[in-house]
Length: 621
Image (tube, rainbow, N blue to C red; front, side):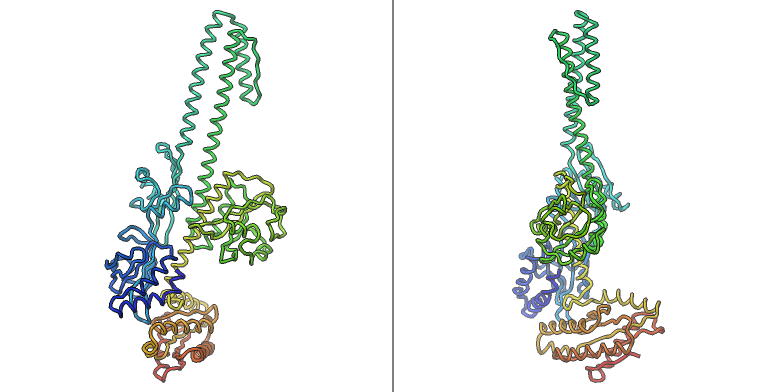
């Protein structure tokens, strides 16, 4: 999406050329094909102002169909940027729909999207090593499962999870699988994420061991019966004593003692020896059965850990909240035996940005603020794309950024999505503790799950940015302006804070466009926006109001200060560009009842400045 903001003028130029040339798509096709290679999107379409598809970067031969009835197109053709999850001809997708301007005129609409389909689900399944499905209340939308198993997903459980807004766990013994139904939100639509684990191998092992036990007990009974017949014929009392002693010895053996009995070799004693051997065999299979039960318990613990992390990443789409929730959740999972502290670093170029932390000192934060990829344990994990274990950081030469902390072990997990390391998860555990290979594999799987969540959160932030900002200048759009101005106006009413606004218009902009062309006009708009941002404070706010008009909001600023800011902006525009600007100012007073009155006064003042010959500053009454 950031690439789209940068290359917006080229798209505009391509559409203008198409319109003016009578249908030549060459320029538009060239810029769209270049952008599509870097977008990682399934949908990349440009339409004209009637909603007719001019070009599909993902399907160049298919064009001419109408997108006018797709949700959001009407709004986009009126100048709005739309981000939504909606259902199209080929199923559900996340779509960004935005008008393409040249000057104040809309020449077309661009649609960018990601499809929620089986391909999407299978890709997640490959990265997480678990079967996944996405569903709505009316059924499954996308799945990595075979159609036979997909059809067995419980619609009632999907509805229960979505209605109650909480996960539902199901152990399906009949079909030998365990399923987790978890609610999640994608942009503005609710879906159910279904994670399935196959338990058929475990069930088969248990059934096999049960059959073996039954068979062994049957042999024992037969041998006991044969021994009884022999006792009647031969010796009675003495062999019975030995059987009794053998049973008692076997009981002791099950209690933890070894049984080693030697016999002289007559038939009864040989029978007793066989009986003892069978009991030892039963003991061995019972032990194996217990091991299988332990394996099932471990599998349940794994599923519980995956469920906890899935719930954590499903609760938040905001990146800051997501990262903190991940740290807080994973450090509390008893299976891992971790300390309740840790950090998440995100890779930004060659730097490791400390994006979230839990329970760490100010010294740690200061020492790691400029860490680069390849430095210390976290940097090495990002560089080599592998999990790093450090049993005792005080004795590990790789731990190059030390700080005053108690002795501890580290596990550093790379967070990967689509084959790219997005960051690392840094966790603490007791020093010199051995960590099982199975636990490391599970943590690696969780790392991939977190990586996908970070990727989705970033995509959400980018689409949100696109929906609230003007793609040409990068300033806020009218929608964002309404939100911020409403907040500041209410604050001024409640606390009596001063508030001033300015309406700025470029003088003779149409003449400039006619003389120099629309591309030069777009460049002038971007330069004017840059000058405005430079002359105002960070607490102030600037937006593109429409066409060549800009709106500036000055927080806690009175009329005299607002006039001085306008004077600086007007002077800077004159010195750094070929044009001049007219500016109208209005300031809050207690007689104003709505923010629209403040805007209207600034707008009237701006038109008054134009009537006086332009290149003027006027204050509203």
